Length: 124
View (cartoon, rainbow, N blue to C red):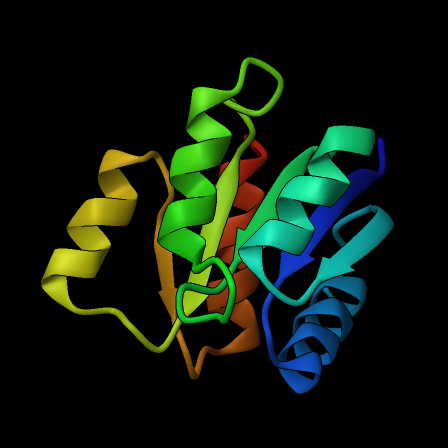
């Protein structure tokens, strides 16, 4: 079964890097939707469903922490597996994201680290 992913990062370069890493990983990837901030992601989540979300923390308009809190409040997205990929991997941020059920992958990451986090999140 192909995995449909919502990729949320304000950096188009980072979104391309994550997409390329996942496509080369051997993980069966279906549709990948992209958003440049948390509000765009919420708008997409109102219309589409996904198997996994990958979020940055530091973004304009709505950051990843605010996005994740909003997602956890909604019935449709409260159980959606989420991975946070961010330069902000301070102990406080990691604890905050973990409390919301999202492991943190630190930027810069190795392809193996990212793929392992995705496979773990989807229960593989």
